[in-house]
Length: 491
Image 1 (cartoon, rainbow, N blue to C red):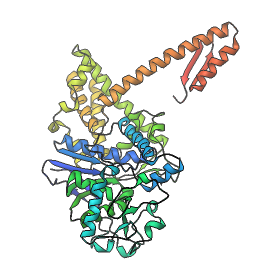
Image 2 (cartoon, rainbow, N blue to C red):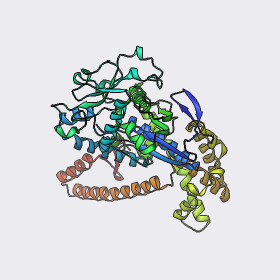
Image 3 (cartoon, one colour):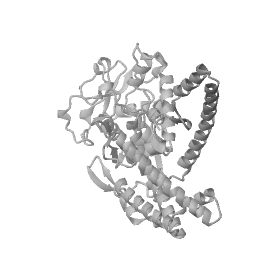
Image 4 (spheres, rainbow, N blue to C red):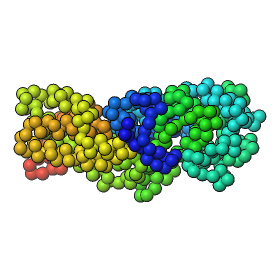
């Protein structure tokens, strides 16, 4: 096994050595479904998407778990502010996240457990920690983890406990929860129900009705689905402290090995600042998809090394759009030539050149080396562009066998990045976009013809109504001596 990944815990490149030979177990911190997904949220999903695809292409079995946090202080606060049941609020945004993952072609996890679906496991973990002397209840329904009880607390982020004033995230701190702590640096495992919160947002426990703290769910669910010791724990770099540090503390205190390796992705920033709701610089995925093709958005997010910050800009999208056009142009032209040469059709060529048809051992060596080196997508892309260049030369010279070879290579490599232009995710979308454009053109042309008739009849009122109707739909009509022309604004 020659895959090497940067381990945030040791701050070094380490070979991936699965606990169970041939099987890699991965846990990724997923969404807290408090609001609509922005591109910062999707960064982690797409970074680990590439990892999962690469490991599977290498012949490894992967068990991939990505959780959903559907009960949390922020969910309760935002749902109350919007006069909506907390569970309905969470479900709304869980659906939005699922739609965003699908739109960008993210690999589905093998399991996607919800925090609310694993309350018994979380209660059992709290009881275990109390029995082992690492946790205590305050007699008022709250249970805390004693950070001084664990010698290796702070080892993930290399922080000394004496330098910390708290181990809670700011969003999780409130007077009621803080009141029962023996040490201000302890963190909440179980929070007592508050009279200001819905009764449905709490569960019976040995300490009274309440709900789990933020960190508890990931320890309980990774243990249930991946075992006491698993291979990779991932997430955004902003989760390293306190969330991942506290997850590790709980799990180690329970006597579990937990994650052998920590892999973190960097932020998406706008004007140098991390994407966040509080800064008001969030780019909502659904809104972006109204303006940018999904493949272009994916290209912009997943073709930068996962440990490198992405600075979001219009120029980044323009570059991604040009790159995607370059890929689709080559693969489409190559498939067309092969279909014409062999008296077949595009569908047959797509099947014959499918990524799985190229054996792993036949992938370009430089590409394999790049992906094995901590998923070095920049170096991997350089290999892809070289194959596109060679393929376009072969197209120009009508070297059919060479075209076939380069098309196989390009499809196999871009598939690992989730960007195979002839794959079902994007090829069918392209067909759908073409059909949509054709339908739009038919409807708009009919309205413009009606407008021309109204103008000929000097029915200016009707002509203006049609023009306003089209304008409201985002379509600009330009009159000229040759007749009316139209275009969708922004294109």
